[in-house]
Length: 202
Ligand SMILES: N[C@@H](CCC(=O)N[C@@H](CS)C(=O)NCC(=O)O)C(=O)O
Image 1: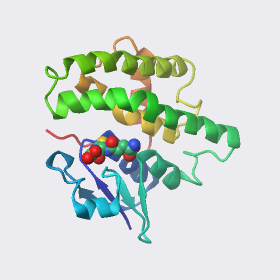
Image 2: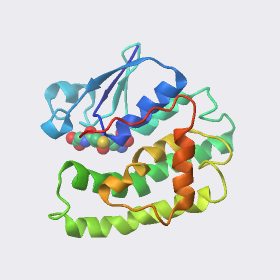
Image 3: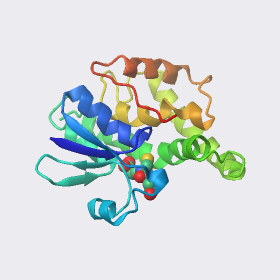
Image 4: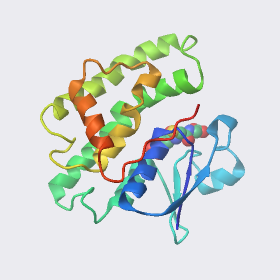
């Protein structure tokens, strides 16, 4: 059985949980409260020297860090990660985009505002980050105005990776009013077979 170490409410942790649920892969969840420093204990650092969740333990005991690496590993051989070389590279394109151009601005602002309640003290950093978050949303909007999913006609792990923080972007203060294609896509993703909502922390 797989074991996923994660924090409830973390989009990065939700990604592999959503995928495994959709693929019917059984897993157990171990809650790691990073707000209490649980990712920095010697025991956790022995599992992931980078001190971050999610951390996936495979049934044979091997471990995997990095949410998007988990998506690739778990989706191998399924339609959610196409075998065709170009189609696959297009999925990777969105996974790398998510980590470099989207998550650092959308997830980070949400973390400051929603989890740390530091909207006021981080006002300047938020003001710097938000235009870059909106730029990432603009790139998604442009694509989704033309295709139902990010890489085209089919739902893939690219959609899971980008859905995770886009659907809770409002918790960081982002508004999606000007992004109708993204809003329609969020609904489309939530209608996929086996979809489960992200558990949110109060
Ligand atoms: N690139 C990593 C990012 C993981 C990450 O930033 N995890 C955060 C929670 S969402 C974390 O564990 N932070 C705790 C820490 O840095 O101590 C991934 O996609 O898995």
